[in-house]
Image 1 (tube, rainbow, N blue to C red):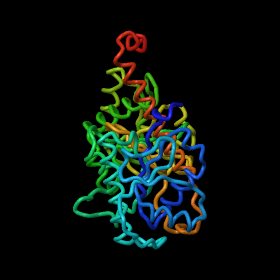
Image 2: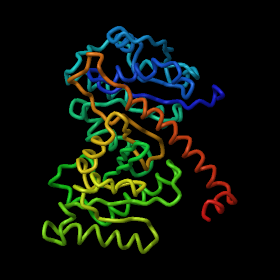
Image 3: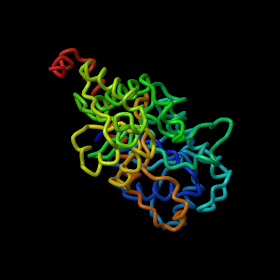
Image 4: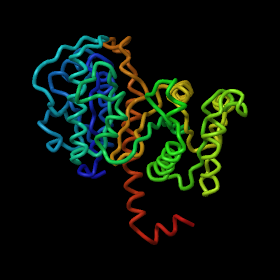
Length: 348
């Protein structure tokens, strides 16, 4: 591949006291990774050097002032800070949250300015990163406020894709939050991303019920009958391949999920428990529906193993590859849509 055309993968480093730094460096310790992309890490030479020494990771990198000066095909580190912050592995400190935010803000600014092509985020601690500037329950909501489009939290592997109607919301607030408008919007976003980012021409989508046994015809709650089913019928009548609601307790164990291109879960744990059970360490969190591509690994800061050298970089590496693949698919789709003859051929 032409060096100049390598996809520029921006990386926010996450919580300094978690496993983010370790999995990032382990990912790019394999020099073959730069055959696929140009990594640009938003941190500092001093912090990267400390992680290298602490974990015995042999990696060469190029320090730059900003992403525009990154060298293609090499590991680049943008010096977001010049000081030497304290790293206390396994501790949720205010300082580690502040530096995570510095890295994220600088990386997002570079993404918006087209200095990087995609963004891969290492895990943050949702509590210690909170400030007046970052008053969000996580990356997804923050990015939705910074980028164009409407976001969908989409957990993805090669064989399983689960999106969320509601994500970081208390369970008690879920039923009231799920409205016909929300369902239609999330289905639209999911269909669009399956077509544009995954190359699926006519996506087939399953909706999981809100209540146990999808309400058992109103015996265990009426939301499924009164909210979900009418919207599913409406969308089906319009030609969308949308089915359900399915009882979540048996949907995955029976392997019914294999019959669909994607599943839309009602709330966070309903989707993420089966996803992580089936795919942990191989899954990727993709923020679908936005104007730019952002992925992250399927795990958190993992304070319990931080600093021990035990962190597995597999999910982070998958997040890098998926960001690259989605970026390419999206470019191909946009090119296709600009060509009337190809577009007509696709519709057949």
